[in-house]
Image 1 (cartoon, rainbow, N blue to C red):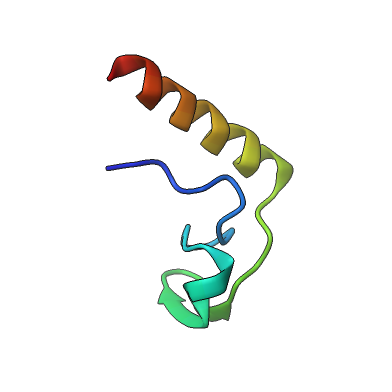
Image 2 (tube, rainbow, N blue to C red):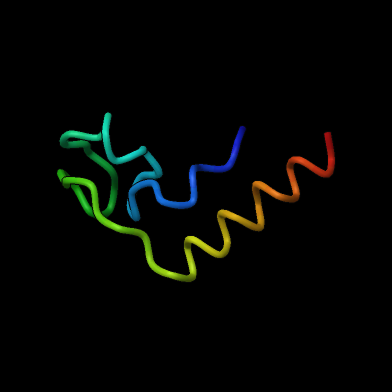
Length: 54
């Protein structure tokens, strides 16, 4: 499974434009929310790792 876009939703990993309202435990129904700086960093690292393994 591919790592989410670094700027995708903080809670569910869906990009902002197609997000609308989503359900995800434990947060429940939510709108897109900006990820934390740590999430952005972790997602960038995961995507880089995926590219180097391919």
